[in-house]
Amino acid sequence: MGLTVGMRHVVILAPMPLEMDAITTAFGLSPIGDRQRDAWSGKLGESEVTAIHIGMGPPLTRKAANLVLDGPRPDPRSPTTHLAMSRSRASSLQPRA
Image (cartoon, rainbow, N blue to C red; front, side, top):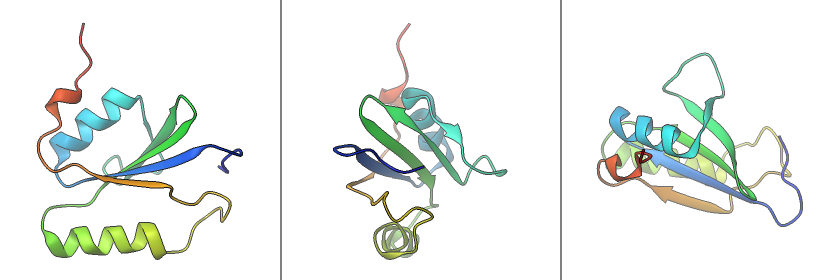
């Protein structure tokens, strides 16, 4: 899934399952693979958004950030342009009725 010119690829790292659930619901993301907790992706406006459940703690955060920024990409035309870290429960992202 390559980006078009001018499109952003935003990656959100979510340590806790509750945060991951709120992020995927708020941004309307769909699972990429077979395991629901791994990575979810979707489009939001002109941005491609990927959310990754990483687990808690500084070592896991460092490992995930390094993989996102420096690791191999399935599509080299799709670099990460923005990296965000969910630092507390993302319940404020819940859609409002």
